[in-house]
Image (tube, rainbow, N blue to C red; front, side, top):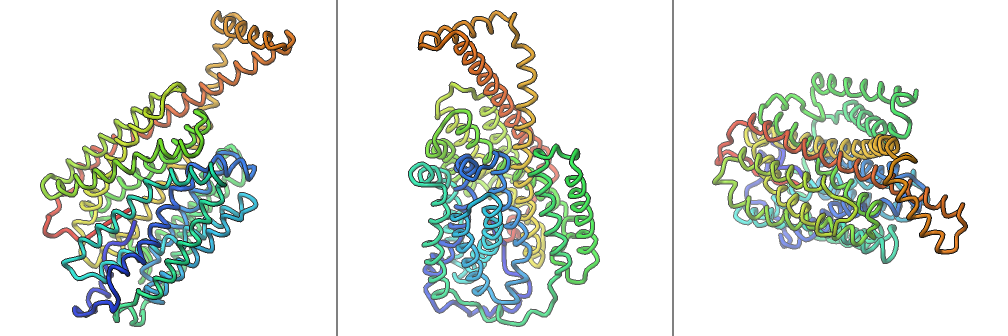
Length: 533
C-alpha cells in the first residue's frame, strides 16, 4: 500500500537541487524497518487467531475482529495522511506513527480480554496507515531520479517479503512461546525505527511551508462513523442473527446515514478530504471496483485457510504458516516476470491472465478434504501468489495511468481505502458464510443419518465394538459411538462450508476478467510512477 507521488503543491515548489544531507540508503533502511513492521503485522496474526480466541475466551468469529479492526483504522488513516503531512511535517508524522504503532503493539501483547485487544489493534492500524504512504514519499525524494527505480525495488521487495515470513513467523512464535510475542517483537523494531528516523530523515524545504487549507473534519468524522458502524454490523451480525436484533438495525441505519452524509459533504465541500469526483474517470472507477473485489478475495482467503488448517486439519500454528507461506514466494517470482512483460503486453491481457490463474488456484482449494497432505494446500497457494503479480502491477498501472499528476495523491487514498474496505468485508463475510453454511450442511447431512441407514448402522456397530473392547460398558460405548458419529458429521458439514466459500472466492476472481475489458489503453510514456502493497 502506499501513496503514489508527491501532491501537486509539493511537486511545484520542490527545489530541483534539494537532496537529503544524510546517506539515502540509511534513509531507505529507516523507513523500510517501519514499513516492514506494519506489513508484517497485517499477516502475522492470522495463524494465531484460534489461539487468541481460546486464550481470551472468544468465539472464532469474534477473533476475526483482530484482523478487521486493524484494516478499518488503517484505511481511515490513508486519505488523511497527505493533509496531516502538510500540517505537521512528514518526519514528525512518521515518528508519531511509529510511536503509536509501537505503543499499541505493547497494549496488544498485554491485552487481558478481546475488547482491549481490538482497541489496541485499532490504534495499531491508525499508526500503520500513516507509515506506509510516508515511506514511499520519503524514498522518492531522497534518491536522485536515476536511482529511484532501485529505491522502489527495495520498497517492493520489503513489502513482499513480510507477508511471506509473516504466517510462518507467527506460527513459530505462537507454538514456541505465546501469541502475545507476535506483538512484542514490534517493540525493538519500533524503537530502532524511531531512532533511525530521527537521525536520518529530514523534511524537504517545501514540506515546511504552512498549509493554507482547512482539514475536512466533518467529512473525516462521517467517514469514520460509516466505516466503524459498517464493520460492527459485519462482525456482529452473524452472532446477533443479523436484522433480527434491534441494535443491528439501528447500526445499519446509522451507517447508511453516515455514508450518504459523507458523500454529500465531499461533493459540496470546498476542501474535501476525499475528492470523490475522480471516480468518474473510467479507468479509475473500473480499477477501484476491481480492487474492492480483489481485496475481498485476497483477505477472505487469507482468513479462511489458517482456520481450516488449524480447526479441521489439526495443524499447529507453525505448520499452518508453512502451508500458506508459498503464496509470497509465488508473488516474488511473478513480480519479476511481470516487470519484464508489463511494457510488452497489453495490461488488460495480463490482468485477465492473473485473475484466471487466481480463480484456478482457489478452485483447487475447493476440492480439499480431511485426508490431504500439506502439499495439497501449499501448491494452490504458490499458484495463487504467482497470480498476484499479474493482478497487482497492471491493475495499479491502468487504474492510475489516465489521471493527471495533481490527481494522483487523492486517487491513491481512495484506491487503497477501497482495497482495505473490500478486505474487511471479505473477512467478515466469509466468516459469516462459514458459520451459516456449516449449519445448513449439518441439517442436510443429519437428515440422511438415520437408524435405518446401513452405513450408519455399520459405523455405529464398529465404533461401539471398539469402545467396548477398551473396557467401556455397553451403554457408555454406545454413547461414545454416537458422539463420535456426530463429531464426524460436524466435521463434514464444516468441510462442505469451506468448499462453498472457496468456490465463491474463485467465482469472484473470474468475475473480474470481463471487468478488465472496460479499461482504456494506457500510454506507456504517460504512465505515472506508482507502487503498491
